[in-house]
Image (tube, rainbow, N blue to C red; front, top):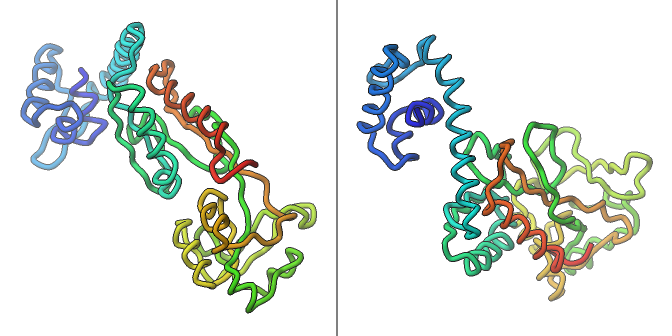
Length: 295
């Protein structure tokens, strides 16, 4: 049953085998044995594709519930031992994942020797249910969904620039002054870009016209260090540069409100102890030492 559900979810026997630790032939034989047991064809197979029959669609819909329930039961039974063990699959934003989550993972694994971790870092939105992650960490506002989210900590954002840039172009005194400056924008190029600054009318939204856009904070930090303009970034990305004077803050009284770091889970009824323990670990760690400094 699990072989069939996994083959359908993964799109083939080979992919299912990789996930289950079996060969493609073994998965195929398990599905064939299930069909023989039921006396019904569940899959239509060709050399390149497979598709569920009507009977297969009905069976897989019911079987997926049973497979998920069994996985939850196995995890619950394992939790009774009081020991954290097994694979923990985590997804995190690129820069934050490298600078803050990777060190946290190392410390967590030192405390729990039977835990293995797969840490995937990228800057696109990841659905933990669809892509098989136990935890997805994301910074910023979340769109409504069936996923479960837990707030871990707030993260400060600020504007800064290099001393050379400010000496050449002058220091802005109000948000309106940014119209005369080169803007480095975190995000994609678009027609209606804005910065969510405090004290900018009722909406707190200042239109900006960037000279450089990127979806990676390190790219923008390097541009700012090179004197290319003023950047708005999470404080943890530029904390070292602010400390050593390579970058200096601007418009400090107009900083946007902090954004939240969230842990996002699949909408399962049961959450394994290893998942809960890691999120508790992160929450305690970042509340003691907020990323980028106090909010």
